[in-house]
Length: 52
Figure (cartoon, rainbow, N blue to C red):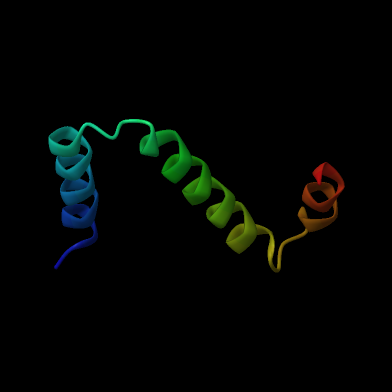
């Protein structure tokens, strides 16, 4: 199962169940998770920690 199919399946779920309010929550969680992963060992970590 590819990573793209997970996103397509999630989109189909949102479309069929009419739960579009879940999309912003999931997008925010993915961005926040990417930020945590990228800031883990980088030189910009002190600047990101200052945001919170």
